[in-house]
Length: 119
Image (cartoon, rainbow, N blue to C red; front, top):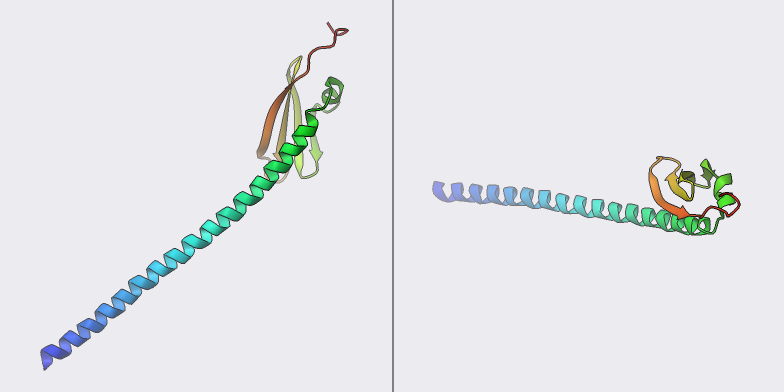
């Protein structure tokens, strides 16, 4: 009889250990799902920001040399900081930075030939 009582106690211990392992695995699964959901939410927000910045730079692409020259340097444009530079006489660089983190969202270059009078 003593051997049977010992086995019943051991079976109970096995059940407790199994439930503990199952609870830990469940906690890990819930945590991973939550983090994945948070990452997807963050990526969707970033994608929305990139699309808006791309649309803004599409309008900047219509600027003339005079427009680029007027906007040289850093300027606040809504939620962004727009940085216009001129690394070469006929080349302009345009960057959009997040005004909060100062991280660069998009960067592109625009070629505007020199005017015939400027030569």
